[in-house]
Image (cartoon, rainbow, N blue to C red; front, top):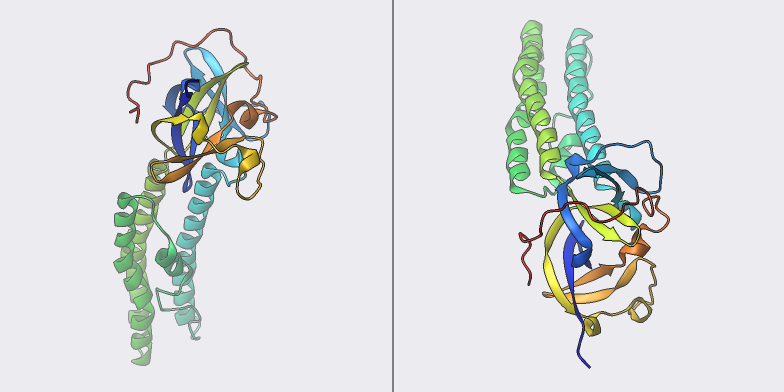
Length: 285
């Protein structure tokens, strides 16, 4: 009896590798082409138009229990906005402490302010973002050093010099930080580009939002560990099985089970196949 080997397209979600039957995937497009829709359904991200066919798009991360990549990014950008505004508050409080002749209660140590702590623990996903983050260190340090300059001026009775030091920080270090924050937000959106896999199933087509597509692998059926034989006894309807691939273990997905009950199944059914481009740019291992 001959052995059956199927082709699986591997893709990444967070730090886990997954696989979907390659012959199901008809095209890959950038997630920026997703349009919002009034249609409702669990885990629906929107729709894409493929050669005149409107196709529902499923957020795979949300479907399998992860936080949506889009939601993570939106949350990160909101957090950066809070850190930016926190330094507005910091400088405003520093000036108010001079004008009201009271102690300045905020930290002068850039490493322990909220943004400083975030900067130390954040792990950038790309070298472009890592390089950009390194640009924050100097203006951030100099801005916090303004508190020391102010105290020195106050100790010598030079109140106007203390106020001028704050004004200078607004126009110099804070202005530089503002530009850096703006660029960082743009970079984060550019570097976190997602991909939509347009895949066919028995009732039509569906778009699957993933983070990166790796390559196509040939996997023999005998190499796949079915759900009922997984080491921990886990049984998840959308898991077809596990397979060892290039010193890694991929979770193989059952497309029909993945989209069942999401609102994408049966939505926008089509007859025939859209006029799609060949997948010759994918390397078969």
